[in-house]
Image 1: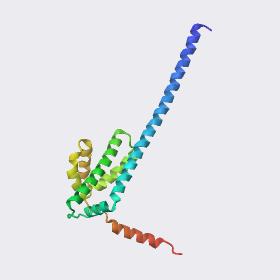
Image 2: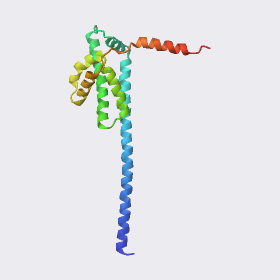
Image 3: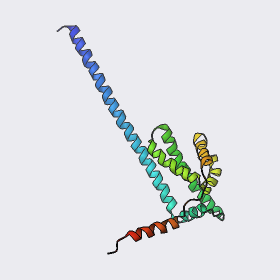
Image 4: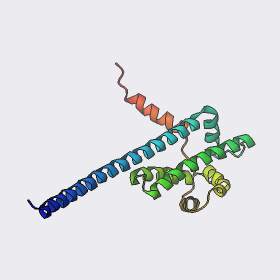
Length: 178
């Protein structure tokens, strides 16, 4: 075997090694991308659960129920509390908006978040809160939420107590006593 033949074999082996390296790099990049998206989704879920837990605290919940019922008698501290909760709400969804725009949040997850944003954009207390809070945001997210506010069909949210009573009555009626 000549030196030229050995050089050819070495070039071939080197080429195969480069292809194998590129394939392995592609696999590793795809796995890293999946892991990154999973971490982003986990963070999104943790944020949402934390916000829901805060909103479900009895004192906060009372303020929200009154605000969503159109109660104009909220005290200064209650109004501020509602505004701060709304700020947390808008901040939560800003992160999802930015993640979606960056491609790190999938379309289905963003559509869920967008559905919630649209529902809240239609509620008078959220609109009141946004009219003050929007100054804390700049750029395309603020413009996006402004657009949702313009497009929304404004109306009060559900009466949770009435909804609970009606659905619980239906469920209890379907329970077989035995």
